[in-house]
Length: 119
View 1: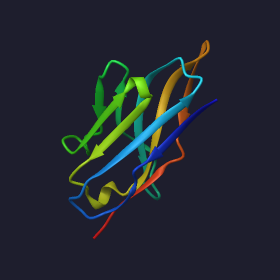
View 2: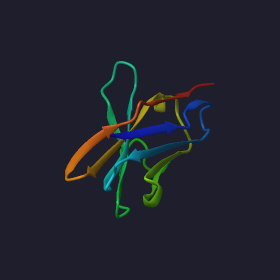
View 3: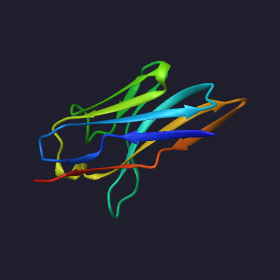
View 4: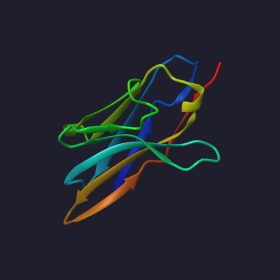
């Protein structure tokens, strides 16, 4: 079994910063890709940023230049540094990991952490 545990959400004023963390634990052989998604009330879940085990990244256009995704492979941990936050960044943020466990590949989700950007 695998667990993804997120932390770092909260309330921040517009223009502020937050750093989200997500640590994966369990019988993990390797993690191919880790990502952050978000879902605002009444909207579909969308990809925010993703990073492969080799360090390749991609970002949603709406966060380019403001958010940075990074990971520490040895710790199975991914981070999302969010700067210049806007009210439209308000959402529940979910960690995602596509990984190999034993001989199979799986897609896991964290429980979500709430980010609220408001004055």
